Structures are given as structure tokens and as C-alpha cells.
Image (cartoon, rainbow, N blue to C red; front, side):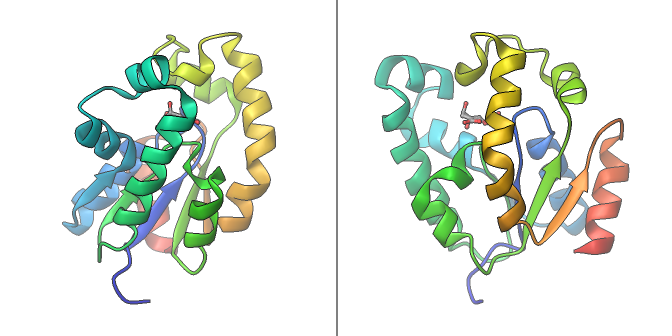
Length: 167
Ligand code: S3P
């Protein structure tokens, strides 16, 4: 595929997508693009503010545009927001790409993100919401993945090393 990212990193909130993607980008001296950050930059607002002020549909439309644009960038390491792979146009567009699914259980996710209410979709009943959302999304994450790496209980360097060895 011409004009494609080196790897697209997907997975649930709290799995460490941005951190692991940054680690991969640093090791390989490649550019990192994080679609949450790209949306925030384009919209001039935080993801939380976008949800509150304009609603989830508005955020998803902005997210879809950001992901489809980023998927045309050659050689980057691309981290997607946890819900991005569920957007039908994004699900389609990810076919044929190298996709790293970072997997984790609720215990580690809770430790990492602390369910501090900064994530709009996890602000009410965070643990139950995370589990329900992950159950619904897992089949899509798994079907898109060309590589799955479990991050539970592991440090960044360890996960990056495994991902790079198997990519
Ligand atoms: C979302 C995950 C967030 C962000 C938005 C929606 C989701 O990104 O895109 O709050 O639907 O799971 P992270 O996965 O980086 O937390």
C-alpha cells in the first residue's frame, strides 16, 4: 500500500496507546500522529469540551475526518482514539493496514487512567462502562488487528520491544 502509516495503534482507553505509539515512533525515528490531539488542534477545543459542547456525533465526524486524513500519511506511527475503529468509514479504511491492537483487562486499565472523569464516555459508572464498551468493541479490534499485544502489568519499553519484534 502506498502512502500508508507504518503502523496504526488501536485499543481501549487506558491501554496506553499514545504512550506505546510514542515509544515506537521514538525508537524508529518516525513521526507520531495521535488522532485525539489532531482533532483538538483542528477544533481548538479539548475532546471533553467537544463532547460536552457539541455532542458525540459532532466529535465522531471530526474524528473520522482526522483518521481518514492521517491514514494517507506515509510512514507515520498513528494512534487512534478508542472509539475510532468503530466508525464504519474508519473500519473500512483500516483494511489492509498494519494494525497493532493493544489489549488489557479492566484492572490495569483502571490503574492507568484512574477513571478520573476526564474521559467523557467513562464519566458515569466508569468500570461498568469500560467493561461494556470493551465487550462491544473487542470483535472489531480483533478483526482489524494484524498484531495483538497484551500490555497488562508491563512497562512501555517491554511492550514496544515486543511490538517491534513482531511487526
Ligand atoms: C473515546 C476514547 C478517547 C477519545 C474520546 C472517545 C472512546 O480516546 O477519543 O474520549 O470512544 O473510547 P482514548 O482511547 O485515547 O482515551
